[in-house]
Length: 541
Image (cartoon, rainbow, N blue to C red; front, side):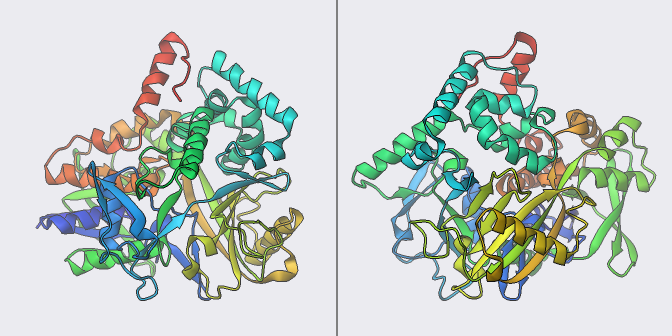
């Protein structure tokens, strides 16, 4: 039987392996460099408390992905979830009374969670994305609201040519709103000014969100509240921008449980998953890849051949591995790949007795948010997760609060290089300074570092097609996933790139375009191409 070598046991790699064993005509062999399953979608367990690295909402515009997830972990069955309508393949179906799983009885279950993300700015809460509610209007004040309104109107009358992420944001929100709620946080994430970042990141992450869509969503939400419910809630939320969804699915024990379950299924059905096997060399012969060199955690080396090769490893490391075995890599390809930028990530978990911030809709000592975006300019923490609100089963003691502080950094910089003890003390001091915790309430902590979390959209990224065109010449090499494509894919997009690659392999179709086309905003990129020759148009919102 043909063998498919898959580099990486994250969502993309394991999705590919699952699709191969489901078909049964190709044996997948997964090699993962670390000792963990799930990549950045793994779950870290510390003394009974579980950390979701970066936060993973299980929601997709793809019916196939939504169904895929629930084939692995069934949806919880509670009186609440019986009211949800799921729209799949263009047809509505309601959950029947006997479907689903009881989270009190099994760990293999997907919870239905309410989404709440807010911005913490000037020690006040603002809904994320910004919504037109009385609390927002009160917190901003009349003068600032007027400046934001006129600034937005100015951006609509005279839109900018979108050469940078700054241009992208200003066209959709106006400069005043951009300066208040987008600029500082985005620069925390990337470490460079928005004027130096390609607008492609906004097209993939912000997508159709704008002042117009935010207003329309607010109106629809108000209407839904005023009118009696005529039909069950639509969990697919197909008429809502992704950033505005109200519900999402979530594995009871965190995202890692999904991928650990997938990995076990792959092995049970004849595939292979090997941990602590780092790919250091990739052999080629003409326009085909033939084998990979591996180094284990103990330093043992080995070479393994295959018929198809799917890579989720960082493009920078992929090109290095190909050059290491004598493949003639063109100078420009090597230069672009070597200089591709990445942004690294660390998270500090703090177990607390309580929080000092309060919210009328939350329980005492606990706010109801999944994420809190920290827009305060005097601290370096970028985002705060409240793990209790992702799943109560992530916290060993429900009377305690388990939070994760997310810092965006560069491997080797002052944040990354701190000891765990120093980083914990720094994080505690930052949260105390903005009124979120009392240091005396901290009971325990854990620090987790994740290299190459975010493929960056500056530097040689603008020349990435040079690498893509060369790599695509190898007919049996497929690049998928976030790092595999150097694209800020969500989990579901990474899965879809893997599915597209497997479908092409099984059909003996060597066209790589459908794989690269996943998560591209075609309308936006067509508009950008038009702007380059005819000047900017008013952006469609």
